[in-house]
Each structure stands twice: as structure tokens, then as C-alpha cells.
Amino acid sequence: MPGDAWTVYGEAQKMPAKIRRPNWSVTATTHKVVVVDNPLSDEWILPYSDPVPNTSDRRVVSIVASPGEYEPASFVLRAGTSPLSNVVVKAHDLKSLEDQESIPAGLLDVRIVKSWYQSAAIMRRVAPGQTKQFVSELLLHDDQLVQVDHQRQVNLVRTRPTIYDAPSLLPFTVQACTNKQIWVTVKLPETIPAGHYSGTISITMNRDGLKIQDHVDLDVEVLQQRLLKPAYTVGMFYLGWLTNPKSTSFTGRSKTRRQMQEEFLDMKEHGVDTVGLDHQYNSHSPEKGIQHAFENFRDSAKMLLDAGYSNDKLVYIDWNMNESNSPAQYTRKIDALRNLSISLGYRRLWVYNQDEKKYHQLISQRHTFETVHAFDALNITAVTKASIAQRLKGLLDVAIIQHDTSEHVISSLKADGIAPLAYGMPHSTEERPATTRATYGFSMVRKGFSGIFSYAYQSGYCWDDWAQWGVQNYRPGVMAYPTEGKPIPTLQWEGWREAIDDLRYLATYLQEATGKTDGPWPTWLKDSLLVDSPHVVRKKIIQQLRKEKT
Image (cartoon, rainbow, N blue to C red; front, side, top):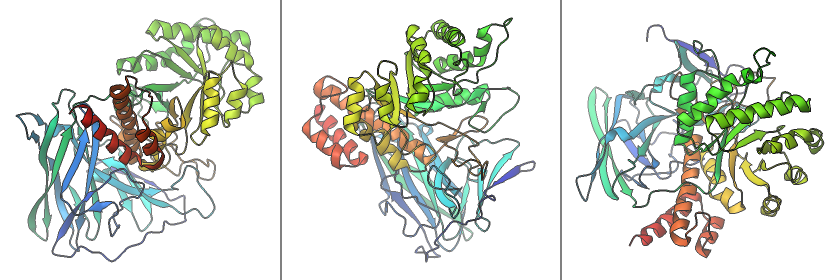
């Protein structure tokens, strides 16, 4: 559109991605639609994938979900040697097969899965010799928001006048001999009756001057059970700071009030129940008092409550541990922070200590742990080794540790009164939805963790995977990309939501079977968790839930 401007990302890295262009199997006189068997796979469906992985020729997308749940589905539109233009994909109401109920089309969010270039496919940039990676990641309504220049292997992002996505899916083009993956998220109403619902997703397009019509059938089974909350902490680091309302940034840091509100809601809709709030601690003058240092943080903490989060706990993060060199000043700081949390109605305060430090660095500021306890608050931090947390017995209450920690060590931490929360493997930098689902869902539970605390919702420059190239060795971590309003989700973010839903299914089944949301586990479940994928474990739990209602 007139006035639009684009920012080019990716020129800093010279090593090209290796892209294979196969002989195309769709002929000139046809297009083809294939259904994705499991939308959350680490095997990306790229524009040039042929054959298309993880798909089948059936024309029916079937999902099973509970009232209030978000559940994904996907299919792929394939062009032959002629492009498909003015493609319109439209969801229609899903009608009940038993009565007059329906799932309105407005609760089916249809998006494009956008593939683009990134500097790597892992957390670290590996140089020299690391090639660019062409990955599937973004879930867009406006396919033109991000354009890809394959010759230069760069991304062009529409950044002027601002970054924003359309409110619903816009018409798009499928270039000749390419794929376009379509993503559908079904949001079931909280009060939807159990039963089977069916409808269509229509596809209209132009090809060689002809108007073509097609469709995909969508069948939804709604279970009788409402999903319970997980019996575990579901935490996420949030690095955003409230800043000048007249200046909109698209990084993980500076946030307008609207951006922060939308991102808090987005995290909640993806199952997060505990947000670690980062604080840009301000120096304060004696005249203004220490409360001045918490003005922006207070607003953020209140916005969490306004977004519907529980007042069970407020997690405070100050990466620099300001005032910690002086026991007296640190005491005043924690006192003010505790009073702030009480005034907002929070029942408990968690205070983050030094991040990923060695034991001698942590214990050298023993007074910080003791001060937090003196105000009836809890100490939380991430440690590089679980043994560090074990040596902090009596001081550290919540330890964030790597997911690959052994079950024996996790059990020992819990015996010492330290709640172990999993993070890493992967962080949000990695576009691996299946791994994200496996790590933060059933695998975490099987190993005995008390929950998860992932880094991070957003970090760094987000849209620019090459920011600080040659200086910063870590890629930006992004679960959802910032815009001026609603954030843009990613495949890994949807993998996260499915992981949390796996935990909700587990809690719901265990409550019905044992009367407790955290166990004990029957033998079949223990065995399944050891050998089956999350996709299969969920299916088995659903089979058990069906039996409970028959």
C-alpha cells in the first residue's frame, strides 16, 4: 500500500541456507489439498516440500477437544505449474449432528504458516560456517506482512507505518509449484454441549483465468469433561517494561500499555499462570522515596490482575539485583516490594536472585536470601547445576533447572524443600513445536518436576534474528512476535499450548480416576508416558475419559 516501508533482515549473514527444489508432483491442470496428520511436528512443511511430510490425502480434518479448549488443525494447499491467485479460505459454522447447537465460524481462527529465514535453528549462533536456516514459524493473517527474497535469502518485514497483522485471514497467492500451509485454531465455547459437530472450510481461487472452488471438511468431537488446571506451576519469563506510550517498540523490552495488555492475555490463553515480571529498577531520590523506583512495576503487576491472572503470587525479577550490595538498602527495597504486593492484593511474593551464578557468588550475598525470608517471601532463581540448588537448602525455595536433570536429583531437591521447575531444551529461540510440547508437558511431569518456568516470552530484537551480529551469540527468543496490538503466534507457541493442555487432560483424568489431580498414576499411564509420544498419550487419556462417562 502507498506509504508502506519495509525493513530487510538477514544480510549480515553471508552463508546461504541449503534449499532443495524437488521435481514437483502436482501437474499444471490441478491443484491439490492434503491434510496435516499432526500439526505439531518438528518436520517443517516448507513451500518447496515435495512430498509434503506428515500429511495424507484424506479431505477430513478431525479433532477432539473439551469445552473452552483451543485445538489446532492444519492442511496444505498445493499449486501446480500455474499459480493460484486471490485465494480465499473461509471457515463456516460447525453444526451439531445431535441437536441445534453450533460452533460459530468466528471461533475458528484461520492463518497462514509463514516460512522465513533465520540465522540458525538452535539457540546459539554457530559461527563461522553456520548457514542460514529456512524455517516454518509465523502464523499470519496477512501473508504479505513478511516477504521472503530467496535470491538474497533475506526477510522483508513491513515496518512502516507500524507492524500490525490483519484481524482475519486476507486473500493470498500460492506461487506455481509451491505449498501454502493453512493453520486453523478452534476455540470451543465454555458452555458448548458435548457431541459431534461438522462443517466445512471453503477454498476459492483463480487459476489460469478460471474460478476454482474446493473445501476441507472439519469434524469436531466435544468431550463432556471440562479440563481442570494443571497440578503444576506454568511460568514464563516476561522481559517487557512499560515505556513512553507515544513510542511503539517491537522488541522484547519496551512496551506500550496496549502491547503489554495484549501480551498478558496471549500468555494466559496459552496456559501460563505465573508471569515472572522484569523490573527496570529506577534510582530514587530521598525526596521521592523508594516507592518511586517501583512506579512502572506497580502498573505492570496490576495489569496482570486485570488480565485475569491469579493473585496467588507475584514474581519479581531485577536482573541487576540493585541495592543488594548494602543489606540495609536491600531490606528497604524488599520491604517496599512486599508492601506493594500486599496493596495490590497478592498473597505471596517470589523474589528472583542472581541468575545462573555459581554457588560462591550466590552465597556471598546470603543476606539477600535471608532478607526475603524475613518478609515471608520466597527465593527463586535459575541455576546452571542442580547441585548448586542443593547447597542452598534452607535459602532457596524454587530452583529453575535444566529439563535434562535426573529424576533422582529432582526427587532430592523436593525432599530438601526446594520446588524444581524445568526450563531449557528448548528455549523459545527454537522453532520446534513437537519438542516444545514434549519437554513442557508429559516429559516434565514424568521426571517429577513441580512445574515449568520458560525463558522467555520475548527477548532481544525479536523480528531481527541477526541483531548484534558478531557481538551477541544468542538468537532472540520469541514465542509470539510483538506488533502494535495483538502479538503474532508461532508454531512453537502452539506447541507450548498443547503441552499445557496435555497437563490439563492429565489432571482431569486423574481427578476422575483417583480423586486427586496429581495422582497416583495407574500402570497403563506410567507405561505410556515412557514410550509414547504426547500425541498418543493424549489419545489414550481421552479414551479413558470417554469410558468414565459411559
